[in-house]
Each structure stands twice: as structure tokens, then as C-alpha cells.
Image (cartoon, rainbow, N blue to C red):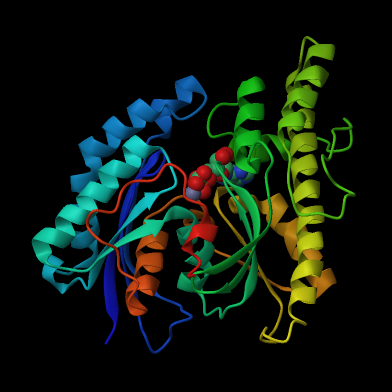
Length: 357
Ligand code: KG4
Ligand code: ZN
């Protein structure tokens, strides 16, 4: 018996609803995406160079019902055919999270279906399994606008953090740098496009923390370094902007690659522990920044060198979407990990808190 789950995502600037199907006979995936509807608020936030929480929450309220209807219609199923309702319960902008969470609870209550409050980070962490079969354990680089972490995913709901960012996330660094250079929001795709026209060797930007052997990240200094370079060469031509974009993308790439390489060494060593299962070494990159072609290619190369299989979801499933929330919900539904209807929206919710005691 397959599990058909509706997912709802409203934690940042995308309102999304999707229906997916999990076959319990293939618990490591892939799943089937019956519908995947995303309404981006980018145009509303672009003038501000970042997401404005109040605008985001109001926009989620105005469109969430339509999106859910659309997702169910495109999936060509009846609401009563759903086996569960999953909604992001955090972490994220709490006003937005509350909109999706309340919608999900209300549907679950009125349809008398199981409800699953999903951790958005777990959604990103498990998406690759929705796309192709992938058994645990694997090493995960979760790299988005709000998060930058290296995590050993030992099993479903068993996570160990190897490192996280001490300040800005990588996506945030792209967004802030793009704002500084007048490239618009979101910064990642804009900088990636501009970098294609630039020379990544012209400016010497720092690679914070590299060389310390660890797995933490720090990106806030990069933005300052970029500002200093830009101030030194006023007026800044289009060629300068392209070169700055290429150098910034390269600096971020080098940090992600070096930190991931350190994490791979630790992950391989951890496999030697008696309690740990020996299997192929697997590396997964997830989150919005994983849509970046240059970064993906560099990570794939380091995987080849370190004998890790490389896995990444297609770009539209790397950035925020509801299929990943529905899938994470379905994985929880399959193992009986349901949520209560009094579950609160959480602005902060580290993945580690999902570990069972
Ligand atoms: O996962 P996501 O959609 O939302 C969060 O959970 O944060 O990630 C959004 C982030 C933004 O910072 C955006 O600039 C970045 O992902 N991003 C990219 C690319 N596409 C999106 N960064 C670099 N290159 C890209 N192509
Ligand atoms: Zn996200």
C-alpha cells in the first residue's frame, strides 16, 4: 500500500503545496511526485534586497488555499485519498510558518488524517531520496539562504553535526554580496550568471577558517572584503562587477569544498566505529545553493578524489518546495512518527533536536 501525502511549505518566501507518493516497499526511494506547485514571492521582496517577514506572511495567507487546491487538482486525487498531511513547522520566519502549519492542521483535523509537522531542514536533507534510491548513511552538505552545515545522516532521524556556520550562511553571503553590487534578489542565481562573464583570479578574497582542519564555516568577512575591493576601485565598471562576482563565487566554492573534504575524512573514520555499518561512502549536497552549477562541479570533483558517490537533487528541488516537505512527512508517516495538533511553529529548530533519545 503506497502512502500519498500532501505537503505544505511557507517558511520563507515561497508558498508551496505538493502531493507525493511513497512506496513502503522502496523506503529509500524514489518517490513519485504527483504535483509540485510553488508560488515565489521574489518580486515582492526584490525592491528590499531580502525577504521582509511581514510581507511574506501576508502573501502566504492570501494564496495558500489556492495552492493547496491546485496541488490536489494537479495530482488528480480526492482529498479523502490522502494518507497524511505534512506542513513545515520550522525553522523559518515564524509568521509564515504559522500560515502553513495552521492550514495543514486544519486539513488534517477536518479530513481526520494523520498530521506531520516537518522540520524544513529534514525536508532538504531527505530530498535526494525522493529523486533516486539512496540508503542511509550519508554525509550531507546543507547549504541554503539560512543554513550552512555539514551533517552525518546516520539514519532516518539520526543526525550528527560536524560543522555549521559561525555567522552568515553561504546563500546569505551570495544575497548580501549581490545587494552590495546592485545585482538584485535572490543573489545566488544573479551572481552565478554574472560570474560566467568574469575572471575568478583577479581579486584575492579570503577563504575564512580554511586550513584549520575543521568543518565550520564563516562567510561574513567575505562580504566586507568585497565591499573594501569595490570601494577601492570606484567607479566600478560592468567588467569589475563580473570579476567580483566570479571571485566571490570561487571563494565560497573553495570554502565549501575544503570544509566538505575535512568532513569526508571524519565521516570515513566514523565508519570504522564498531557500531557503524560499512557501505559505499555517499555525499549529498542540498539546499538552494546546491542549484549552483559551479559549486556542484567542484563538489563532484572532490567526491571523485575522496571516493564518495556524489548525489544532488535537480535544481527546482534544491530550492524551497513542498515536495520535499511531503516526502519528509511521508518518511515519518511510514515509521509512525506523527505530530500532535497542538504542535507550535518554531523559528529555530536545529536538526539535532530530532534525534531520538
Ligand atoms: O533552500 P532555499 O530555497 O531557502 C532557504 O531555506 O534558505 O535557499 C535560498 C538560497 C538563497 O540565498 C539563494 O541566493 C541561494 O539559495 N541560491 C543560490 C542559487 N540559487 C539559489 N546560490 C548560488 N547559486 C545559485 N544558483
Ligand atoms: Zn530551504
